[in-house]
Length: 158
Image 1 (cartoon, rainbow, N blue to C red):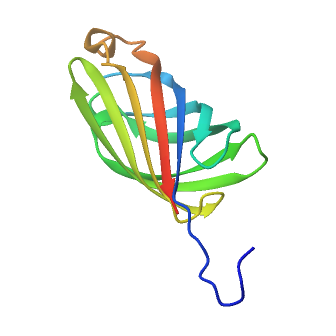
Image 2 (cartoon, rainbow, N blue to C red):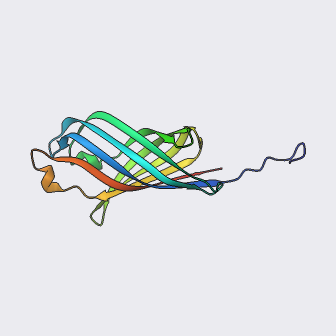
Image 3 (cartoon, helix red, strand yellow):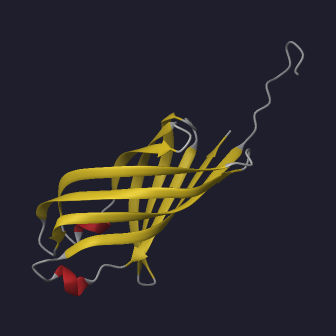
């Protein structure tokens, strides 16, 4: 217990979650920009925190109608995701998205801040690594109908 007037101790923390992301495209991604529905789910599990011996999980679901092509997937943009945690809490993650191709893999990096909810004020970085798009499939009428990647989410705060 602290005595009156004592400074409150701030304990820095870090949360690290392994996971995966699956995204579907309807109709499939092709080399020609077209309006399509993109749906997906990020699973953040398990999550380990430096300030707790317990593990927990999180997930993010998304659906949007947008204009995309195989070529536009690598464009940088911004976004906001709502993460639902197994504890019942939520976090709003506002980020800048960059994409790079590294040794034949597509690496998506989301860098930003938890702007509300659990871990509010913390910085967050999520990387999603997947096999680079099959450019041959992008040239077909069906295109690419789904992608899968492994992810890591790191939240750092105090």
